[in-house]
Length: 253
Image 1 (cartoon, one colour):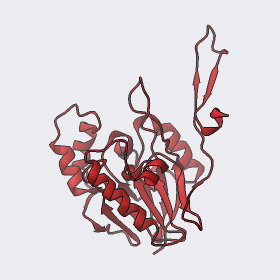
Image 2 (tube, rainbow, N blue to C red):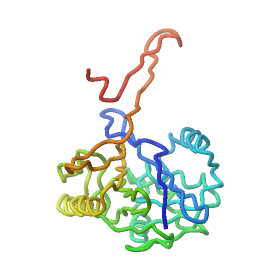
Image 3 (cartoon, rainbow, N blue to C red):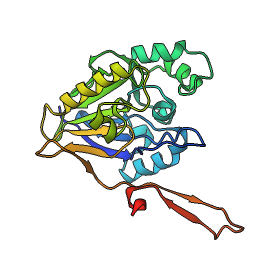
Image 4 (cartoon, rainbow, N blue to C red):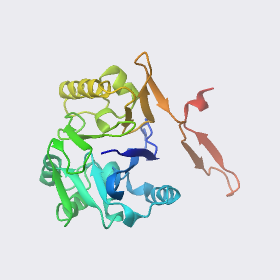
């Protein structure tokens, strides 16, 4: 069964020093057999308008989404599931149980969102292996969270959605992660991810906070597309005085 995957929201490999986590994470749309439309992760609350706009540009309304595939339950990856009223929500059973056990006020898990998710009538708890969707499997990669899922979608090309198991190219290259609960387990998970990526030539890997990547003939990672990220700020005395900050590689030149 073949799936066609495209990036809806481009993840960004950066952190904010003074204003908390950016949470600018990757969201992808997968078109599959029988007219299924699956969304891989849902971004953070601040991305709602943009997510609707990007989906509309692809000819997709929120009620058209049949499945949500959630890699983990940090706020910037799961919080927008209520936007998709007809979707079956696929989430790791161990990740959900762990999130439900946390006290209110955890810095990364949105407690009220998680509790409502656990009561959702179309919730599907996942274990490692098949997801119940033809052509989509998953495996656990402990590290960023200890029950983080990675989704593998068969198609032309095959696509791996790694989310925050490997947030960006740097983590894939070095085998080390910036945010981890267990550095040793995380390194082993990234090594496994890299090995699975290399099993099928032409496989696209979608990190949680970076551009899509493929491997060239020499095994080097090549970004797909062009990074787009900027901020507008008002420091002056009028709305016409606008400062634009380019947050891409171009800003360094």
